Length: 221
Length: 262
Ligand SMILES: Nc1ncnc2c1ncn2[C@@H]1O[C@H](COP(=O)(O)OP(=O)(O)OP(=O)(O)O)[C@@H](O)[C@H]1O
Ligand SMILES: [Mg+2]
Image 1 (tube, rainbow over the protein chains, first blue to last red):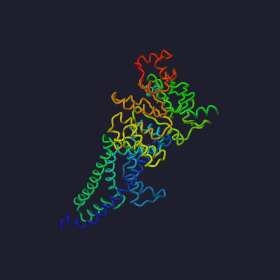
Image 2: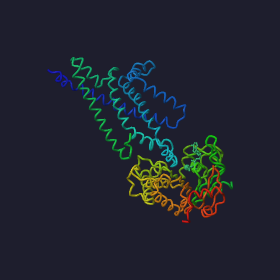
Image 3: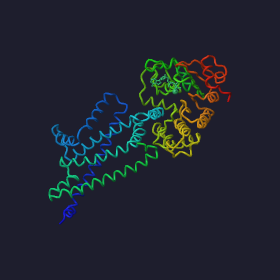
Image 4: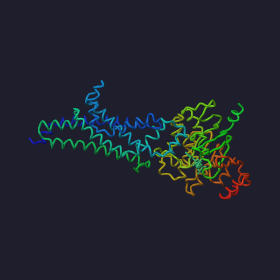
């Protein structure tokens, strides 16, 4: 039996790893997106008392290797009485870590937002919340689309680290097959194919979204 | 009490308004009364405080002293000196419509949605009602054909006409125009002025900063000349343009080739 045939027989393991990776990735980027938007909202027109700690938090996250954060949540939190299983530790770590990156991407774009539009909103009776969700956020998302796309790919790749805190995802599946049958090359090549497939699909979706924003004149990033 | 009563009659009533940036006094004890249906034009050289005055009216700029009433309602501060909570301020603000030199349309929304956005999401109008109102206004400014276009595809004159419709959609007590044609190519100025002229004929209350002297003369009921934050002259347009009282205004008008009667 060739190595490839062995892997074909074990395809169920890859498949469940793949689904697990998709699930972790999907949940964590939704979480990261919400965290990123939330941080941007809190930074918007708030007092320094609030913005300074938030900025420190965002920078601290960005300067941390992802794996360390995952370790901290999985091995460190129980010592303060919070016990998350490996799966939720992983999802949480990804969401918080990439949420900080999302926030930083949004914040950078916010700095170049035309002040005239905000004045127009105020003059039309908008208050902060409505203005943020109806006018600021949609435009900031359209403008940062390519950067967000990049960040999603980093987030996808970071899901592979979760094998180290014993989450059974795609890389874990390859790891286990390669050590059971001693066929690391083939096992990991299959896994690369899966990661690429997700990335390429994501790229296509993000490109398609670009049409939506190009129509509105936001294709100049 | 009598003061409050006179304020109620006016669309805009500005009393003892002063404003400084850093140490520079930009507005000094400005008094201005705009009656309902009246068109008031503010003229003055660059840096004289015209924009600041206009922006104080809707509290985009916070005055240091004085009071401003919009249709009888104090903006920014309560009569007893308490600052106005943001939600309440937003409500009073919405009684004014502002048109900016740089248009400031919201680029992610098409023309129709630029006009319906605030009525729906600020005033709570139903989508149908807001769209009906918007279509009537787009008709008025000649932009119905472009209702599905996005701002980035419009000319400056078209953008400004949409911006006017957007402000009108809030059904404001007073429209504020800050040099609405200064950012336009000369051949586009006319289409915007024509729209504003129609509005004045329909009886809209307007306060306008402009460098278009012939236009100011044609549409104004009152012309105000601002110099270093002081109103140094105010008159009906005929008097203002034909027999200015001060040398300063005379000189200013000479430099801005005085218009012939429209
Ligand atoms: N936000 C600000 N901070 C500091 N100074 C300001 C600010 N806004 C305006 N000024 C100053 O206040 C003065 C009046 O400005 P304003 O914009 O009201 O003049 P203007 O009459 O509208 O002039 P222009 O015809 O050039 O538009 C100017 O000297 C200007 O530099
Ligand atoms: Mg100005």
